[in-house]
Length: 144
Image 1 (cartoon, rainbow, N blue to C red):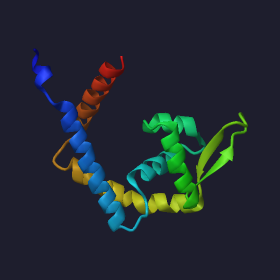
Image 2: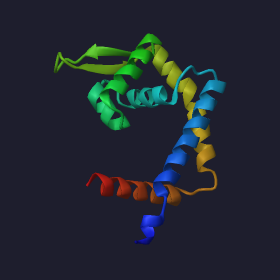
Image 3: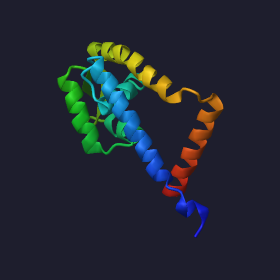
Image 4: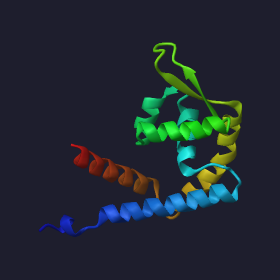
């Protein structure tokens, strides 16, 4: 048995993610954003990648297609995003923020930034670089 067999790093990562999501959702609720964390993640990606396809959005957010469809349906009902038929492939849709979606993004971003600052307090840019390198390595080790 090796030392790494005894390290419960997946548990540590999972509990940290759950706590961050809990605080993030709490802050969104307190700010009256009417968004879930998952809705924010998609809104953020559509803001940064206008005309993104639903499949690419699913890949980039590590969510399955049915989950992305469900979240997008909710965002469409809220008037925050819209689907437009792709000019290249009429079987596909591209996703865009509406004007209300852009306003929601800008209103919610300070809440997101606050949670990020809270989580990153007492850590350096080098710590961030190390964390990303370590997580990327674990990801590549697992996915082959």
